[in-house]
Length: 228
Image (tube, rainbow, N blue to C red; front, top):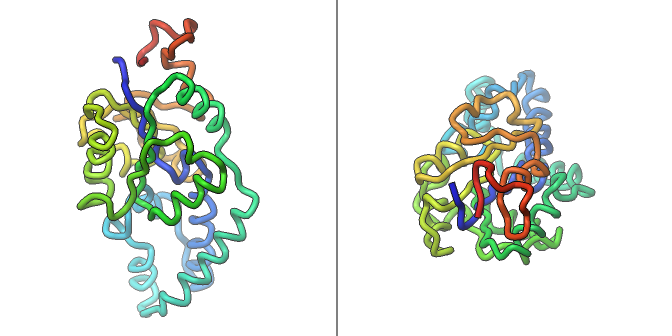
């Protein structure tokens, strides 16, 4: 299959934000006498709290209505502190450089906010690689609905079947498949226990992607599954 564009999820794919976010939630749950296993928490990864909400879950466990305004602010401060020195995921920079040099149109497709995604892309110097970012609010529904991916396809002017999606979550995988796109899963330490059997490939990290793509001038990967 030849691809004409690559669509990247953001959290957990380009930057290892998922772990810090999970750790902040885990601390809050434990402060209130409860655990938050990854097998439970990952239901909301890649989507929003309409899919599954740790807030509702904690309130159900404790029978308490929390002041989420203050708790959210404190949790965000913890996440920001934990990510103060965070860089791009291993392999992200050389991969984006290679795809950009080959003239492949790229997009970020995320259920997170523009403020979060665009802020990180600018901070890490990655924004220049992407023709568009499609985030929460840019389409009628977030993942696992296909809307965000279909919006990115339309913005890039590339048919969905010609788009390759790089994802780390089941919600993202479901959304991309519903959009009729191929998906290569790159799990991280939060999502590594999930079942990605529906993905077209499952890779250990971003460094493996270029070995499976045929890029202009990259003869070593010709004949592999996938290319441009």
